[in-house]
Image (cartoon, rainbow, N blue to C red; front, side, top):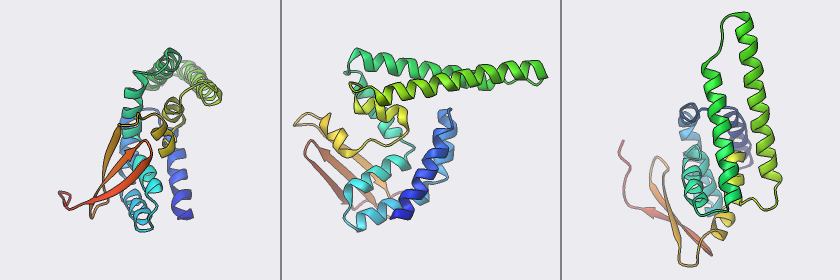
Length: 193
């Protein structure tokens, strides 16, 4: 499993360099079989938390991003403001990427602007990671790292439950996460080919 973890980290490092969401999804969809195998391996070994973390990696973090956005609706103003700044910078960087120049002077201007935006994004990510009062959800959203189950559980109320479904290619599993529990429930439904 160390090899799986190492390979997953390499995939995530490359993914974190991709700014545009569609490209991230495209990149990650080509890695689907790898993550299905990783989830199956963890489940077969009874390592449910690691299996759940691998599902977040497999879905190009779409679950974490959507969950995080919903949780941030109820978060501190500071977290919402920081995330708004982060999304705005990503949007500006993506727009700048689309305006690449072909003339030498225009290309140099574009590169300077894009590098400046990239530096601002990096600085904001660092500020968020190091701020002691920023929520774990916001840190997960901007760091590119899947949220840890225990961090998700801390944000749930006693009666809240999160259910996440994942296809391993051969079976369907429901991860049921409560404030103090996590369970992987195999479902008798076969995925549609």
